[in-house]
Length: 142
Image (cartoon, rainbow, N blue to C red; front, side):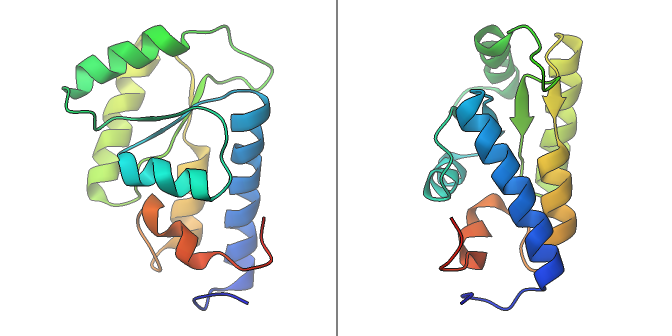
């Protein structure tokens, strides 16, 4: 039973994308970069057990990006990317997403923004942020 009403087809697409990201995050140690502390807590509640990083740490964005590049500059794996980027799918999240992709791509970090794209399509207009995702969980979902 769902807490809120949600279209089954969109729900399935969102769940599949989250399940794949959860698997790669845990089994392949692919980090997920989110905006803030509540986003990290949300993903942990949703079963993400691998590395999760946040950009809002009280430091300038450029300093955070450099630290992340130094931490995750690993050879590309069979997945073809080094980290997931999951900013909220609002205007601010879009701006952050674009700036981070430009900066990290220039530093040879391959980013996957597919999770954000899929969630943005599937979850609009019901929600526009990561921290609201649990409100759409069904009791029978993992």
